[in-house]
Length: 393
Ligand code: ZN
Ligand code: ZN
Image (cartoon, protein in one colour):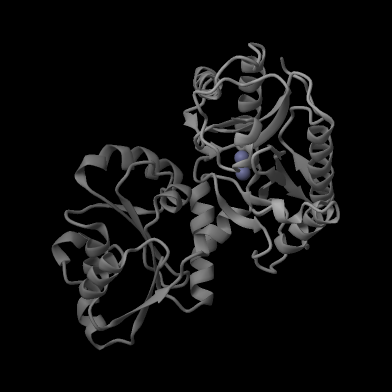
């Protein structure tokens, strides 16, 4: 993230908290902590104060991460006061807010002089937490530490909703990850497909992405040929790729903290008419989905447009998953494009995949996936590899 990008994001959340009349927000999910404060360690927690409360935002971690927090949080969210605490972070947060642990407070800070005394008599304060992330046990420890003057309010999804709209710098990073992944596959395909095992191709692809600078694959690479490709989430096998089959490759990498995701289906040698027919159908459905992707439409509507193409051809039952998902600091995030997605209009700046597929058990599978930025004028793809059916021997 760009320096101090976290400040802007935290500011937006602080405003949203004030609107919801929630005084504090406990941010516990690691991806959210990283997004807001730049912190990439494994034990970090944010306690954000609503705008207008004059309280400071806090970042909590333990002594192992003191230096890392100083560097990362100090750069990306310098307005957060860093606290080194012992024990479980949510419990420490509860104690800090309730003023039960004045020794840990130091000077000023979120609570300050007399805060505990004030709280014993003041109005109930609302503390937002992430019900999708906190286990019941951690929630209970937080509630115990806060005591009766505080009310816990489920605020899950607030940070995720902010994360959906990507800043230009985030879009650039996602595009760079996609470009690196495309380059890696191009390199691997030069070695051919027929006669190599699915596992060999997958391992080589992941290694090549790392050699080109990626931190890791953004999810376990899928290489599936022939009837095996009829499993949408097939695991690469030791089996050799046979000539005359379709091969689905779904891959991506993490670069500078952002993920990429793409799928191409190749012909390993010449394939039959049925394979070509299904391929063209999926390609047409994908194009329809891409064309329908404009701000203001809902994820449900865009899914329906692509799905209709497949349904009209009689393969509706064989496209059993959603059309796409958001991609960012996590490989699967909002917004979703699916039959069960919300009716909320898609916003410009979101980054989503468009990935219809047709899976014929015992026979073949085809999926074609692009990663795109939703812009005012429509979808801008950051996936660059050609989509006409390509023969790789
Ligand atoms: Zn994918
Ligand atoms: Zn995907």
